[in-house]
Image (cartoon, rainbow, N blue to C red; front, side, top):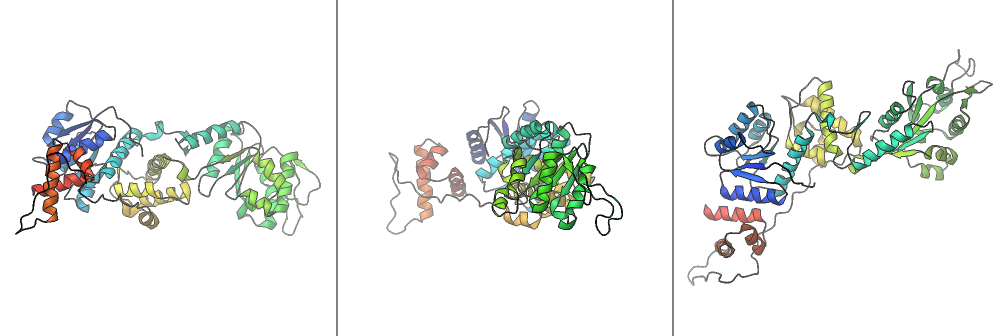
Length: 466
């Protein structure tokens, strides 16, 4: 996730100077400006005259607590992004903070990578906001801002203007029917019918009659003439989903209908003219189907001239976050619910899952979560079990503190007494203090020389003061 400079500063409210300095250094390195204050009262005073992008606050502060600060800001009607940090957090406290309007909740010891990512997410969510409809790119109900989706929308819009057949390729759940409907809406045929049919759902012995109709007495049970799908879609578009499932004998008749623009009902003696635009779709590899002689190459080449590929969700970058919020809005509105917050762990699971079922699987997960949600909070426990179990990424490995081999001028390791050898922990603390003095208190340089992460250095310094 890329961090970009933000025009407004981030406010850090932390009474521990070392922790406040650490947070500000990390956020500055990530491209943000920062302001730091040690109390909630000073934060309120600063906010009264200084606009900020968002706020990060500790829970335990002198005087007013971070939770009380959060509550006061929300009661004022402000939608400022707020991350709450505490070393004394409990699940109940986290839920309380989220219900009061916190955007995220993190615990000490600080995972600086997690803080940077949380800040990015909160700022991105603010940029999008829940009224994201004006920001997101929509193509007749399909959401997508990624380059690959924008390119797809552009190509689909151009192809929609013609009458040529179109083949839509893509994995299951990517939204092939949605794209077919969008193409129909973009086309000059948009006022005529759009007829979808799943080729896998029609029995093979009835398929010809379903597509082309039949005359009275054509077969047992044909007590009256019946129009087929081609006639039903007259002037409009016929969407053939999973065309790879179509029996090969019917493929020849479909090809003829495409070429001649005529169909012959089962049992009929004459061709009937039809004006239908074919949009076909499949998740199958039709090249392999042709090799196995289960799909006609001439029909494939007729359809494939104008083909569109819908990318799987894993190739759509930040679209997944846009989709999450759009789908939460969609299903909360459908269920007459108001989802005001999403638990950070739930958002992380939704963002990190791989979605083999693509957008359909994401939508089903969110529909379930919205259904189970209570009091305006979408929680991790509301998600399907597979998302909760399979979405966790391994935490960044903590760098084990080791003493650097570099010895600064004027520093010496303490000489142990013959009667008492100092512990390794004592030697380490003394050495860290010596290096810190030699660098003039520069914690960044000290951590580099010691070969440890800055968060480890701050923790060692905190331990030595206890």
